[in-house]
Image 1: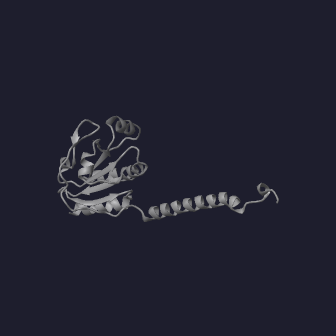
Image 2 (image 1 turned 90 degrees about the vertical axis):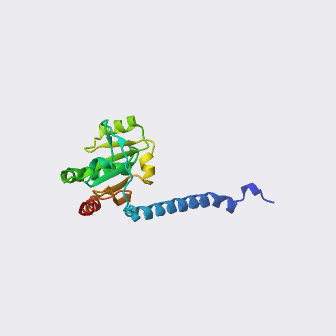
Image 3 (image 1 turned 60 degrees about the vertical axis):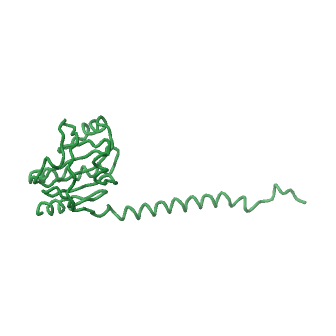
Length: 185
């Protein structure tokens, strides 16, 4: 009988290839699912049409602010966090719109969710906001307003009614349309 150890074992030789093929298949599935979600884009607007419960939060400048401080005006609220990459992109979109829309009486509020004041302050020192930055460190307002995705944009009409809400990135044209509709009442 020949030495069995010297004989090739087809099942042993195929095992690494099967593991490699299985890993490649799994990676491919993850990539396809990721692509499908990215092609889907941001979630659609799900505005409630309800009056937003009044709230005031500490701002980085020391004031206590909320939408009620802008009664009669359209208010855009951006829920964000310093660690959130898409939130940084959303802030860039808002920075593009802010000079023109603020001149038309639209108020912007950036509500930092779940972070300590020092973290938000350090971030804002590097990348300043032209509008008030509010601190929702304990998720009080974001939970009350059912914010589950960052960034989330909420637009209120002059009566404080939620007329636009979108989780995920929102482009400038969509935001401007939502603000114009809110202004028309």
